[in-house]
Length: 401
Image 1: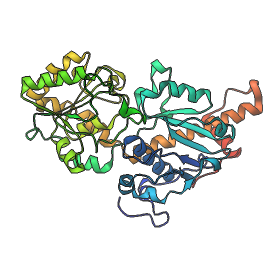
Image 2: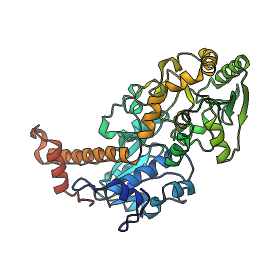
Image 3: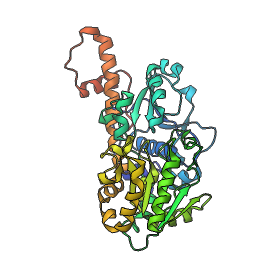
Image 4: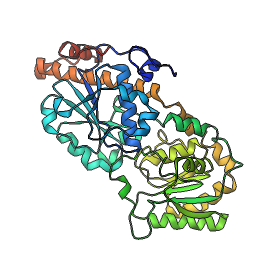
């Protein structure tokens, strides 16, 4: 849908359809965090647009810097969402912030429901502190919603899956089944460390949902958020020596160069994925084969439905796996059709469906709290989601339609 909705000037609103009634909180504010072109801020922009399509009372939290210009181009309707200052939030409002934010107990005590959106497994301790301060959690994928090491188990209504930039999905569509033009080139991104530097600095923002537009480079791309990154790099180089690959680090490439390299990729190696990282997802959409290991999000078929033979047990399996993929690329590439289909179908509509379930569950949870406050420990157990949502509406919610 390209035409603007005359009433709201919001293309997403025009395309996504009807508003919700009865379950929108007084106001919803989304914190788009920092003005950088990474996946976390992009996911928050997507969520703000979807929530605006459901509830007119959706705002973007006031930022010291404007939203990144790429997001304003990719999602022009974000320019029409009004801003709201954090200090102006009041009882009944909802705030959704990334997991790198600090839960402010003062805001929570004012009656604001604060949700932290988990975008990375690196925020485990931070998430527990968030809960102790009265904030709640949302997850961006299945594995993080069931992160047993963190003791987190979130039901589906608390899971919101962002999607790949629509322009990237369109560009990748032309290359997703192309195998003849793939190059045997191994490119290591500039943030891939040597033997003495652990690759952890790129995750300081906690936004594992990064855009690959400034960092993904091609036939075999290696991004390793571990302390043994040198071992991974050694194995990639060993594989290239066997298969005739060229190995190099890449930095400061233009957007056009990155897309050209990404479209010619054969393999993407991403070790111990801390979330639904944009790099391997976009690479697979463009026709590459993802090679990862049995660590964190790579283990979850719900997030990464890829052949299990390419989810490695050890760094020492990298060389043989790359050799196998390069020598039989067409067959290996076909094994990723399920993952390509999954991430092609994720979009504004799928996120809207999840946001609808989230808003309904939020309204119900508010209703349950008010219900128990009214009836105390002897409250009946027959409270349904509908009754809870109705009670929440009566006790202070107003519709967003």
